[in-house]
Amino acid sequence: MGLLKTIFMGTPEISVPFLKKLKELTDLKLVITQPDRPKGRKKKLTPPPVKEEAKKLGLEVIQPEKIKKNEELINKIKKIEPDLILVVAYGKIIPESILNIPKYGCLNIHFSSLPKYRGAAPVNWAIVNGEVVTSVCLMKMDKRLDTGPIIGCISEKIEPDDNAEDVFKKLTAKGLKLLETTMFDYVSGKIKPVPQHEEHASYAPIIKKSDGKIDPNLPAVDIHNRVRGFYPWPSVFGRINGKLIKILKTFPSEMKSDKEPGTIQIINNIPFMVCGDKHLLKLMIVQPESKKPMDGKSAVNGGYLKDGDRIE
Image (tube, rainbow, N blue to C red; front, side, top):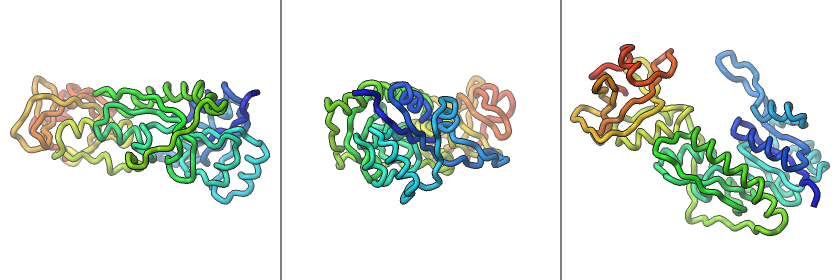
């Protein structure tokens, strides 16, 4: 068998390593990504990271606004006659009209232990829910969201202080291995995709900014998991005396307090927050309004966190 003829579909930064690996391993004919979008305060039209990388690699890039019932796109893909299409965080459901074109189908890298955490934000919700193990899976796509049969998965431990960014990095490294070995074993017929067990399915919805709003009444471990799971966006945030503060890194302590949840306690110049289970949560890195992230001691010394303040 010669080099596989492939197409890549992806959009954000997390997709870029897989684009580069597919270019290295196959005859990559086309990159499909989402259109440039306004970004930042000035709403400057900004290309997605996949487009920028594809241009560096000298690859043809197209950015269709819609892919459903897009005859021009379908005809372009058919003309290429791809062996497979690899999809990594493209951001839209791929219609059957495209799924059925490649010889070996459309394959997807998904960052969870499928069928758990189907959907847009599997890493984040796995951490928020206190999972200690997750996986990255290579799946053959079907017409529904993340329901196709599994070609291969590699597990990865979630450490107690891992945030979403850390876990993505670890899963990306494992996911690239799936492309180097498992993808080719599937194409050669050594691996047959295994259907998912629907009874074990769960869903990881897209994250909204409001998900980061702090609830001091939650147990300390739950707040800690939300801080990890919602880093770097939207982060866990609240207000102290009307001013916004983001909580970027925490550590649950064994100490307890009889004060109200949300109360700041300063112990040896280190800030803690009282949680709903009365345990103290150490505030290791915070970002006061209009300031850069800083460690807890600096926030205390700068007067941004005072004993008796309330985060709400």
